Length: 196
Length: 184
Image (tube, rainbow over all chains, first blue to last red):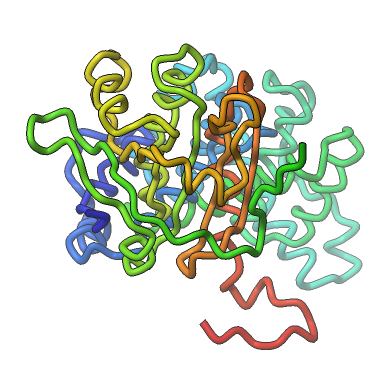
């Protein structure tokens, strides 16, 4: 009576991120055909992370856009863009999310270098990277910081992570919101490696 | 009047009860026992409502049903229960649009013995309060909530609690210094 039937967890997972209708990517297919226990964990992680109480739907999906782009998975990025649009994101919001992700890819590399080497010359020399979009973001400064933090955490730049986290707390962001955003980034990345 | 609701850490009582599992003729009834649930190795979420054919109940029951998949993803057997008989359950299920497609069993505690052991019977009418129990695979109660007759529940909260009971405990990243090593 209580044996679990193989309900299609893989398809449900794709549905959660707006990718239903397409076939199963190879890794996902391997998990589904072996009825792997992890598949349910992954689905629950993704669902819960997107549903975090401190993030609204639009914010959660925009973080999804940033992570999918950072991890170079175009199909997932488009799917998140569509979900974000349905949740009220404008073209400008999405363009800014893309811009932020791109800019962080420059900053994360350069500042990580500076932090690794830790020599006076590099620390004092101007970075020379234009970042005018930080001045007046359409997404608002706080959410722009939050996106920057998530992307920086993915790219492993310690200096960027610590400074964006501090900037957020100065904005009055609750630590729980910071944790929820970074968890979402982490979980979406765990999804990307299965979909890629 | 004093009532003692079975709470966290207690062994969930043994039971064997008739349940409605379908509206298809000849397939309506099934005997559910605590033994079968324990041997399945799964968690159990059992939620109670006061009376069939009342208003707040179907909304709440439909909400649990909407999340049936979420419970099954979490290896939890979902069971709905009241002190109505299996025939009343079956009639209500056939009668109400929101209840025909139910995916979980409706347990009939007609003798009220289980509700009594759980300590959730209302004194006047001897009907069950809106109690919810989360029971782990070892048959131990891990969460109890009890609402008065007219107060609806949040199914999301039940799922959140189930997640919290099931999540994180195995990863070495969460081990605190000085804790014994996990032997899972």
